[in-house]
Amino acid sequence: LNSPSDSMDVSRPTAGTSGSGFVWDGQHVVTNFHVIQDLPAAYVTFLLRDSEGTTRRTTRLAKLVGSDPASDVAVLKVADGTDTALMKPLRLGKSTGLLVGQNVLAFGNPFGLEHSLSRGIISGVSRKLEGAGGRPISGVIQTDASINPGNSGGPLLNSDGEVIGVNTAILSGSGMFSGVGLAIPIDTVKSNVESIISKGFVRRPLLGIVFAPDVMNGELQLNGIMAMKVVPNGPAAASGVRPMRGGRLGDVVTAVDGKRISLTDDLFGFLEKKAPGDDVKLTIQRPSADVDSDKYETLEVTVTLGQ
Picture 1 (cartoon, one colour):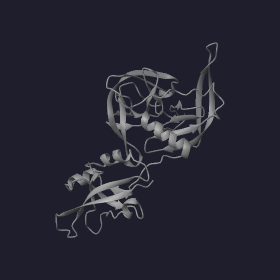
Picture 2: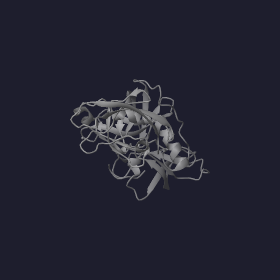
Picture 3: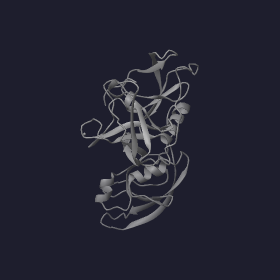
Picture 4: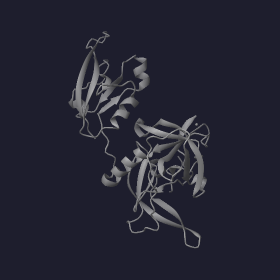
């Protein structure tokens, strides 16, 4: 897959103009959004081996079906479903129940070296990675399998050859691999890819609130996360949630459906399990109208999630 380039920093390891991907079904290839985001056109190169063992390269122009920057997933259409020799989907596993120490294999195109394989173990589970717009990707898989520029979008396989993740980033001080690779869990990828193929986008629930950074919430010693802005005519606005205004603090969300909320990550993780149209009950603390008062009024409001 062709892409431009993308320090201890999180780096998306693309190399020059190449990235990786894998066959999803008879028509589609899955890769990372950051691999294709600036491309005027994407070309997918397949390596095929004939009956005599000779390897040949076949390149196809791909059409972008859709993408989800928040989870760094993109879907390309490269065939019409009839080219079974070319489009051989990988088997999908599950990312739930993974254990530290499990063997994994990372396939990809590091430094333009096609069909490269590295081996390692799962060195951490349930990591979080910041996606587009600051929305966290939960359940990220940490591995010591070598992931380098050009590996982005390639599959992370278990020892049964099933895809359990999509390689997406490294933690590095130099931009090169230093033993910590990160992969998006296949359960997240599967849900989002299916939505992209059927609708062209990921259907994601929204509250319609822009929250204050966690650092600010901490400095103000708030008991939750504060609404800095409320989207006009959005779900939260319709339920009466108040933002910061006139020197007064905004409503502070302390719980959702009875579950304690301390950080914005807590809220986003909760919303990932919901769908547009679902009702959620917010427990909020509303500051007193007197800006010099430390008193809060505790309220419960029901918000119907939008999209």
